[in-house]
Length: 505
Image (cartoon, rainbow, N blue to C red; front, top):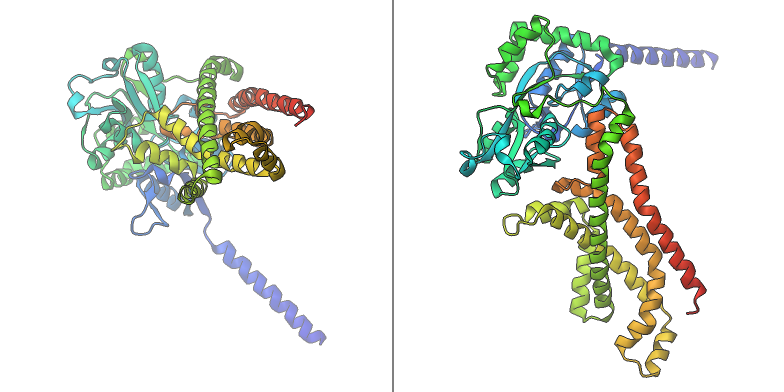
């Protein structure tokens, strides 16, 4: 038995040793982060194999991984969270059309630039002759991606030319809104504009660029040594034509790239962005000032966004309460057909995401009804919360004692009087606490309307944090403003509850 036990022990040791050897022999993974929703030619799901990604940044990541003797592994990160994810170590490098900015230079170890892009203005074909530059768009709406160089340029253009910057969460809807007339122009990278023009004709890309910038790889500051290795690989790719081959394959190689590569190989210090229009100044950076000074500069914009949030939430809640009461009354007093229709509405709304409902209202029905962004946001929130409010009111109405209702009827009160004098007031007391909770929830859910280009508090905070390169101060300010809006409401509700508890029923 002892011999068998010894053999078993040695067998176990041998298996574990072989396992360790196999694991050690496996090449290390080179984790790189990008956003597959950004689409080609950067990163997108392969139509033939949806579980894989393709794009020129995918191939740049592969070039780096092979040079490092590692296997590339894609980590899908939302574009707006790339900076935070790289800083916390979710991946070694961020590659997804990452722009070279002064903020990123101060907070990350950036690679040498590997692609030069131009910020270009796109307008409808019919407006191509009159909207050639940003200065021609005074009083007009111009769309772009939030948190980008283009957005910072438009903020400067707001002050210089009086146009209105409209921020989007993706690069598809700015151009679709341009074609149907929701915005008058779009400012974005030439790669994005040219790609969209191939699939959605109807707009013109103006030949004069607004600014010139570069794409870079983004490493955490602690990974500066790995950044240096990546720089060697990228420079080698510039010399031997590997990078040119990648960009030609994806149809984005142009005459800007040889000049960029010559400067990189010569060791020149290339500025992150050059704006062509002197009236717009150069790319703004708030990393050179303290966080509190940056907060002082941004606080007025946060207050304006808070005002939008509270107005939107109050109007939406008022409409949701009115609709919710009608739905609840219809389900209690209505005909069988009406009750079935209202139940179907409530279950449909509660069973589908509010984001989907917002997209349908703003984009899905745009061909038939072109709702303004604020109206679509108001209706979306109201219609969604009306379904939940109706359940609160229905349960509160049904919680009133049947004895009181029958007593009121015995006294000769009509059904309308029973509802208005007996059932309704008692139900309202029961519904007050969950109503208050729903309003606080709506204040927070209003952050979702940023997908419809409504610049509310959370979206403005995200822009502030992206430009600052940190979420600490912006997050604290945002939380304080939300608390300032929600706590007084909760205090008022508690006061009403105490008063009504002291009042005999």
